[in-house]
Structure formats: structure tokens, C-alpha cells
Length: 161
Image 1 (cartoon, one colour):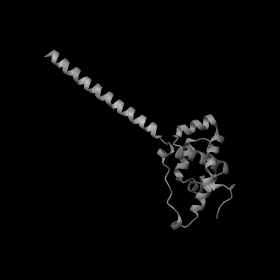
Image 2: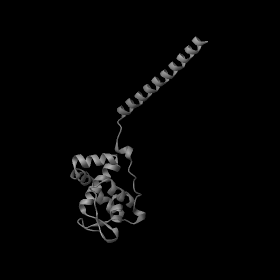
Image 3: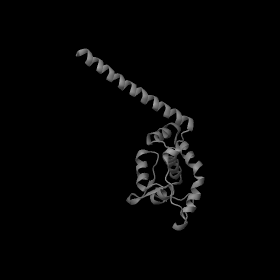
Image 4: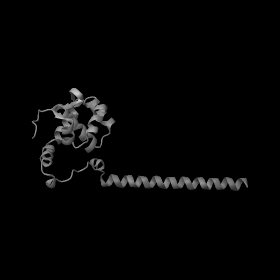
């Protein structure tokens, strides 16, 4: 049974929809003060539609865009909650397709794709070549310095003998 868009969701439903474990949602509540689900008797969490939008944005920033927790906190502080919610809305169009796929029997479902943080930050070929060239140059400088130190030590030994 599918819930309407305005319905409250439990932590299990949210975790399944976002593709993250429940303990991650609890951790995000600690790290992001803006995530405040309703809590009922016994500590049961119920997430409102606004909470879902914010969680989608946070998830996308962390898992797809490769931001750190501090980076997302900075975005929330500087740009506000609405900016993070908008990031989640732009990508939520694919969420309905994922929801349909999750309602299929297990044999018809593809395994979930783990987000690749490295793929979220593409490195262009030219930039990669420049980075590799800089690393090679630094290695050459290091070798030169190390060989220069050994020559200086040899000179000191020869002068003292």
C-alpha cells in the first residue's frame, strides 16, 4: 500500500525510500539541527513531507555531490534550508521510478547501486594530466633534495677526515 505525498512516514519507510540505514537518519538528526521529526510515545519518529524534502537534499549533497557533513552544515547555515530542499526536489523525479522498482518482486529488481563519491566529482582528462605531472615534478624535487643532502653529508665527512 502506497502512502499519499502528504502522509507522515516512519523511520523504516524513510530509510527505505532514501536508501540509507535507519541509524544514519538518527545520526543526521544529531548533526543537522534542522532535521526534527515528530516524536510520539515511546520515541517513535514520524517524518513530515517537509522533513522528507530536507532529507532528500541532505542525502544528495552527501552521497551524490560528495560534500562532507561540515560542508552541508555550511550550506544550511549560509544558503538556508530551502536551498537544500530544492536540491532534493530536483532529483526526486527519479525517486518515483525507484519506488516503482522497489514494489516489483525481488526477482525482477536490479540490486541497488551504491553511490560512488568519486564519480560525483568528475576529474577531466586535462586536469588529471596536470595533477599527475605536478606529482611527478614534486617527486623529482624530493629526489633532488635527498640526493643533495647525501652529497652535503659526504662533503662534511670528507672535510672532517
